[in-house]
Amino acid sequence: MDISIVIVTLNRPKELFDCLLDIKQQSNKSFEVVVIDQGNSRAIEEYINKNHPNFKYYAFPGRNISKARNFGIKNSTGKYVAFIDDDNKVPDNWIRILIDLLTNKDYPLITGPSINISTGKEVVEFFNGVVSVYGYIINIMPYGFSPYDKEYRGWITRPVGNNMIVRRDVLLEIGGFDEFYEYIHDETDLAIRAFNKGYMTYFDKDLIVYHKAARSINRKGGYKLNWYAEAKNNAYFGIKNSVDFIFLRLLKVFKRIFWVQGPFSALFKLFIQGKIGVLDFTNGEVSVVIGVLVGLISGLFSSRNTI
Image (cartoon, rainbow, N blue to C red; front, side, top):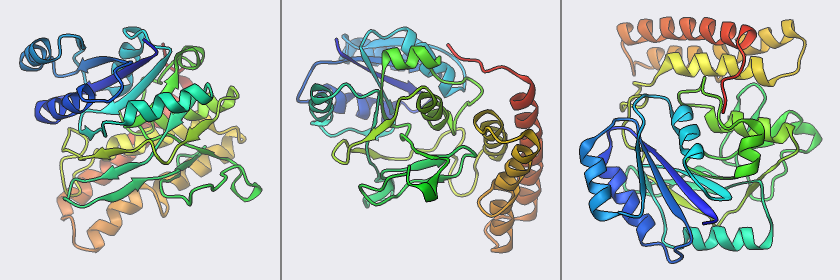
């Protein structure tokens, strides 16, 4: 098989079952499916065995998408490994479009638009996005925009984690995902490390997935986000991926966390606007401070944990 589809799931059986049905109905059948269940659910295993016996199922308990995806890489066989989320709705021509792309050129990394349908309306949440070495993200860019123009030095085209296909040899060369990222920046970090090896991300506007954005342990609705992980992973990301002199790197990391687009200022704005109370604000800011410290220490003194 040329394509392996790896899906990591955690306690979202309904969304997963809908996603698997979409995949089963693909117009082109040249793929394998590998489901990594971090919730170790007997019900999910039984459902797959009964309804999708050709799909691979693995219980891999934990709450770290990077570890689970690395496990999926090891237990898949395709020349290309596709990563989608369990709360995706996948059009029935998704595989056909992907194969058409790969027939014309052996792309190392491919991504496409993600359309949010969680409110019943279609809202573009990702289109031709870019990321900087300090983790600043722009998800909506004009089609044909080049992130390599001189005014955007330090930015690269980024994939979106729920619609990403990577050639296996590239994954193995860079070591797959950095398992420090339990979520957020897992795919952008991989894209930067691939870019540093000479592999660029290709964006195709027709390779669309629809995202239901279901609640999870990191996204519980409203403003209940994992602020600790937001700060921790942004701090680590900047330390590991920037090549600035260390003192300047630290200053820019602190700016990333505490300034306009950072989690610290985001919480402050939510509090001022009355969208969160004193307790949520205090707990969130404490989580940010602890996260920054963990991210900085790990970034400075720990080696990457990859395949």
